[in-house]
Image (cartoon, rainbow, N blue to C red; front, side, top):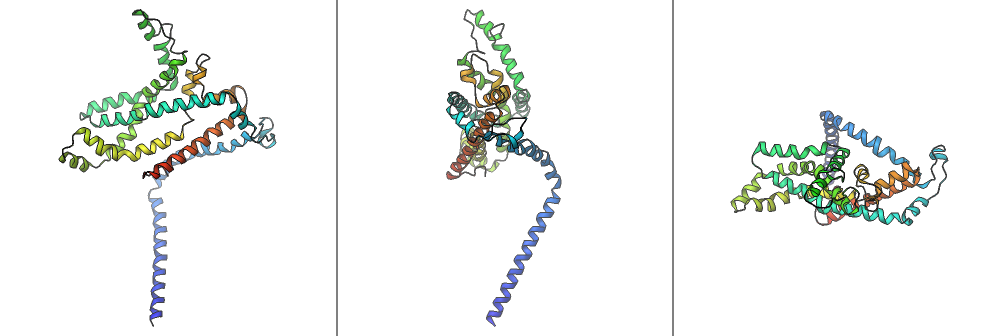
Length: 325
């Protein structure tokens, strides 16, 4: 009798579990239908990534071939690791690597903290219209192309009639060739990035600050904390997950600094410090027609970024952070 009751209870539990699974599954279907317009909104972004990011990955196979356009991928001869060996043995590799890593380090050390600091400062502005005006002004450069940004820099810094050099000449100082001098290249590069992207980069941090529980500020104020203490002990810890996530993603783009910006600054006189992997791929692939070799360089960049993201994410989780996955 006891065994019979246990069997009945077991059957009832199994039946209840099955019904619960069906209910969850049904709820999931209804959840998708209920939010179909939200899923429809992400469709353009999904299509973009499929067409322009994932499908082109099939072309990476030519990095192991001596690709000839008139032969196609199927008939081009295989050369194995030839292009990768060439990349790592050429003298230009260490120049490209050092230039790219130095610029990336400047981005991390100088640029990355600035949006956080600016967001914290804007959060302390109490006058609504003044705050909105500042945000609008610092957002505007983001919507300018790099061509415009570099052109404005040219107008200010060129030796022939540049505003800065004319001011130097007016006070009796020699003119400086900012645009062709290797010593000024990295300073110009960072100044342009800060001017163009600083304001826009604060948006995520400002959004993260808005969801901080106001009761935490009230509790800190009751404990005698001023603005600085509330920022240090409440705001920064609250937005730390966002900072860690963006830092991990930034680390993943170590070798991917962007082509357009540096290409516009690049010239024959500053090439030794301005040539990076992005501009080298353009020169080797499109200008010189070395499609397989340039694809190998791009694949190397992508693999390095993937490995760095995985390592940074694992390190973040080791220290108790959420990471990106």
